[in-house]
Amino acid sequence: MAAIPVHTAASAAKAARAERNLIQALRAANAVSATKAAALPAIEGLEDSQLERLVQSGVIGRVSGFYYLDQVALEERTQTRRTAGLVALVIAATAVAVALLVLATRS
Image (cartoon, rainbow, N blue to C red; front, side, top):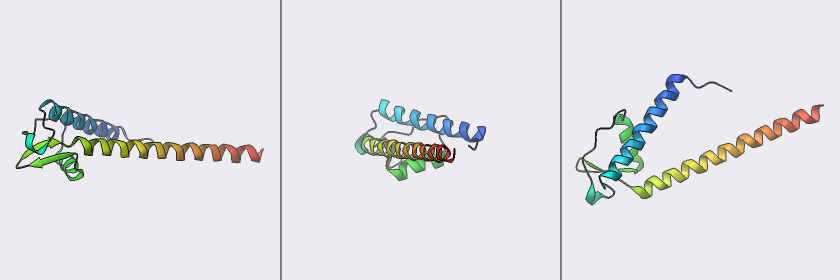
């Protein structure tokens, strides 16, 4: 199994934390629709490219320089990620089972 470089894992953790903080800040500001959009709060570690990906994915909406959380889009993305994770887990478990079966039949 290949090791994940520490700087990559740390960067991913920092980006995930910044995203969670942004989502929490928008919820706290009740910026949950275009009519309730608010100024973007200062979020430590939030990169412009990361914000742009969230806007492009529809999780964060932007109206005249103000931002809001699209909770439906966030839930859909969360569900998609969970499903993808589950599929990856099933594939990995199947590969392990096949490898064990092959090893057992060689004996």
